[in-house]
Image 1: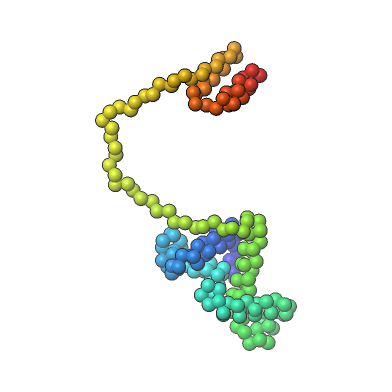
Image 2: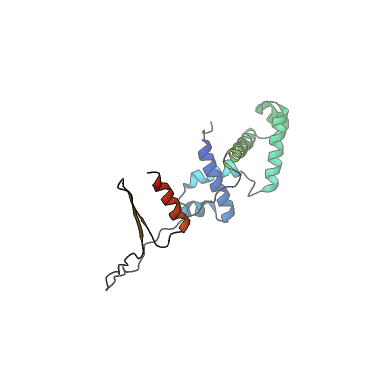
Length: 176
């Protein structure tokens, strides 16, 4: 019996498998570098990628068999007996095709561009703390504009503010 996977989890693993394919790493190295469960990664690679990445010719052959099986309308047992194809292999191909269909459906909902799965290393700094021997210089504001209205509202405006913003502030304040 296959496990049930949510759309969120399937999408997450789809993105991870896409990053894996681009990485050029072996599954064990990839799972170690990205802190992933190796067994879960290989399981999801099998379900999502199947052998499209490792053996494209075999993959196309299996996908054609899957299409023929679906088009036949026959039970998996009958189809496998008539074609002398392994039932367990056909089950795997059909499951893979379902995953692909689900991923395509999710792509339509979430968008077609997958986000990259990126490793972010955390590094402790070995640099000593910088200590200033001189105290920080306090710069006094110059030419600030201060507006106080009767209702007790006080607005301070910095000297480098855009003139149009000052006009908008004054227009807003006149309604108070």
